[in-house]
Image (cartoon, rainbow, N blue to C red; front, side, top):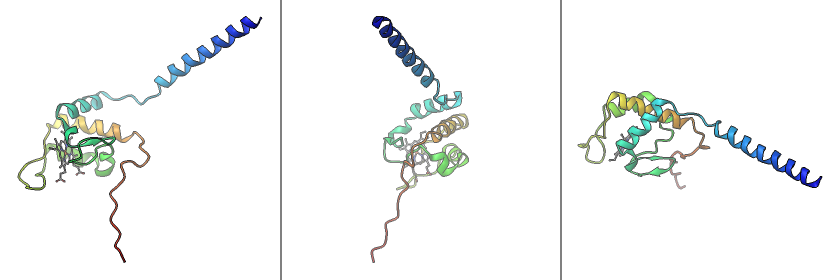
Length: 131
Ligand code: HEC
């Protein structure tokens, strides 16, 4: 009798474990084809050498996790298709992308933007004046 109860409890907990794993692995927001291509553009052009996503990468340029919310898709697209000159010498242009690559990377940034980061990255604070 005790053995039967033991087997029953084991089977129920095993089933719960498998079921919970199955459902939780299907909850994540899937990445669109465009966003996947955009991630590959990000890797191919080594944007990570100067920019961060979730804080990982280089600190020369800004963090890209919520760039779409901060600047808007249109701005990011134009910035990459017609890259401006960069500080400090204003001679070197920012790396540029073709129209289709820029569209894909914006789709990747839009995907990243939907991931909640609880207010991170923090916005730069202005130093308060000392009285
Ligand atoms: C050599 C370093 C470097 C690389 C590589 C680089 N960036 Fe940048 N990026 C910068 C810097 C520096 C700025 C800020 C320029 C300025 O303010 O004058 C910038 C600015 C930007 C901006 C505008 C940010 C804003 O708030 O106005 C976007 C968008 C951007 N980069 C995306 C990318 C993408 C996508 C790639 C890869 C294709 C990339 N960058 C590769 C250094 C780089």
